[in-house]
Image 1 (tube, helix red, strand yellow):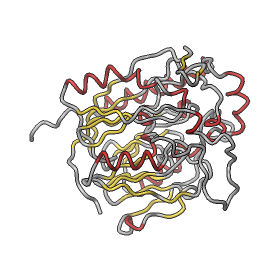
Image 2 (image 1 turned 30 degrees about the horizontal axis):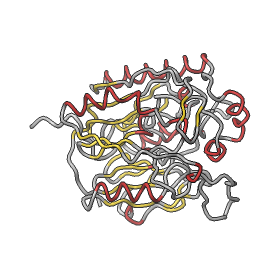
Image 3 (image 1 turned 90 degrees about the vertical axis):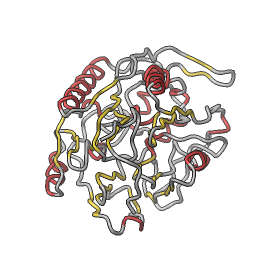
Length: 356
């Protein structure tokens, strides 16, 4: 069998050979902004307003780091090569001629910044001002993958002017049409709002991904790919990977509370509805909901990394024919992601196909 390019990934389930795993060191509370008001739990607003630009509590960072190291150890035991971004001090303030930020965020979630299509890595045009320079933690890796033959593309760097944000945004009531805090001023998207199934890519519009961004990506990828927008019922959407998770060809895991309708294109697939999360309600969650239980990472069409405390989903995955690989990750949950968020699958053993 011929050797694969160093960058080669077409979907979420081909056999994983190389992955980037984020780092939590230097994690900094993001500066308060209308983007946080639209996306963060209301119970955490006072925390963000008070501590923006300061490090997250050391004990929480230390606990999340331990989870990440266990994840890396398990991946390496499973035969996967792991690379890591640089550790960066995100407490340093920065500015442009139009705005300023008291600090950054973290280098913990490569899935938000980067997405791989075949042998190409694309940098996302992120909409959070606090994340404007986050990609710097990954520059060493990007240059290394490029030197080994990978393609390296950066989407248009956003200006993040006030025109991008709806300063009067108020979350719509249940049953009202979706309304987003970002406008169509310029193309922006988080890579985590996309799921790849070979030639078919699925996206949700959200508080971090606008139609302009989706259009840019479709035009960039060309006629060889088809981007489909899924219908959701969550009022504050941000990132698709706790709502809609293709686990293998013909097998789709969905969130029964957030997904409004399974797209018709999946009519011949087995659709699994995720059970309620097992994470205790009192567990500290700065930036997301307990549905991170669904944020799993497929190592191939059978093996799935999952938080060890999600006993109900582990049971169901076994029943559905998968092989769950439990790992402690609940302390990492606190920072807004789980296994899918914390990783970027750079190389999977497979080719570009159509599954529909």
